[in-house]
Image 1 (cartoon, helix red, strand yellow):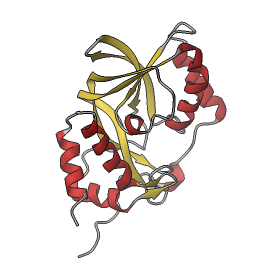
Image 2 (cartoon, rainbow, N blue to C red; image 1 turned 90 degrees about the vertical axis):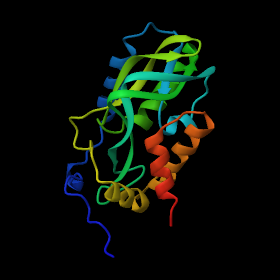
Image 3 (cartoon, rainbow, N blue to C red; image 1 turned 60 degrees about the vertical axis):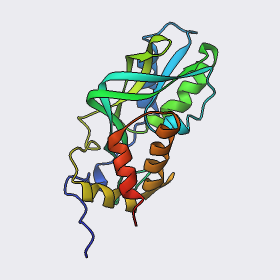
Amino acid sequence: MNNPPLLSNAPAPSSFRLLTEAERRASLQATMAALPQGQDIWIYGYGSLIWRPEFEYAERRPALLHGYHRALCLWSRVNRGTPEKPGLVFGLDAGGSCRGVAFRIDGGQAPGIMEALWRREMPSGAYIPRWLNCRTGSGAITALAFTMNRNTDAYVRDLPQEHLLHIVRNAHGSYGPCIDYVLETADALMQHNITDKRLSALAHSLRQI
């Protein structure tokens, strides 16, 4: 049986462009200008930030975000794929709701943490950083969330299931195989008692031989 062909809506390798240092710095400064300096910051995790935050945090809470849902809607051409053979990573796409984890970081440590976070999450213009209201068991908070930019060619939606499985199983980037990323996220949600039926079903299919 032949493998499914690469989807025609995958971005052309030549269309891939990283943000310049100045563009990334401007994005960070514009985002942080919305908050008073020195204030503690909440960061909302819905994918790999849950199981690999890579920053020190003072508090962690389960958090519910309305207006967005977790989806494999972002072509990954560095971390979990290549420009010639992109993988897929999670984005916060518009509509529905999402259960994730919110991390509180100390305001005094924020500059260094946010700089590193921007290098990780904002290599391109695929995400739009937004301050969004989240519900937690200890009250409402405003957290930074990296939402999907639907106006980028890295955005993809409504992939046929077989094509999606083929891409996830076969893509590999600088951070490793795409399948590891998806299964790590599914396992992390389970460990945090977060239910995502769509992701659970996908993980089950990926684990089948």
